[in-house]
Image 1 (cartoon, rainbow, N blue to C red):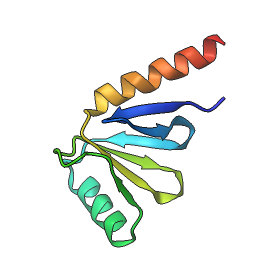
Image 2 (cartoon, one colour):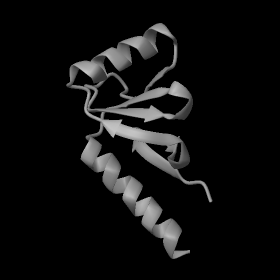
Image 3 (cartoon, rainbow, N blue to C red):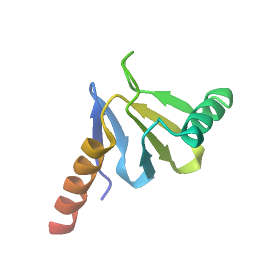
Image 4 (tube, one colour):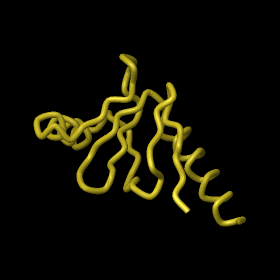
Length: 86
């Protein structure tokens, strides 16, 4: 069963589509974000705030969030744990 995860400010992502959650500080992450912007494959869910995590989704879509990667990972694990209990 597919789950939607809150990534801040009422924005949701499909958990089955998440490939990785990384910090935006490294040079490769910055290049990835820049390339996604050029190819119009980016979704900015920061609501104008500082980008604290970059989610790489399947099919090369990139989602930016103002929430920390640890927070998003915790939410992801909570959803997966509930899914396995069912």
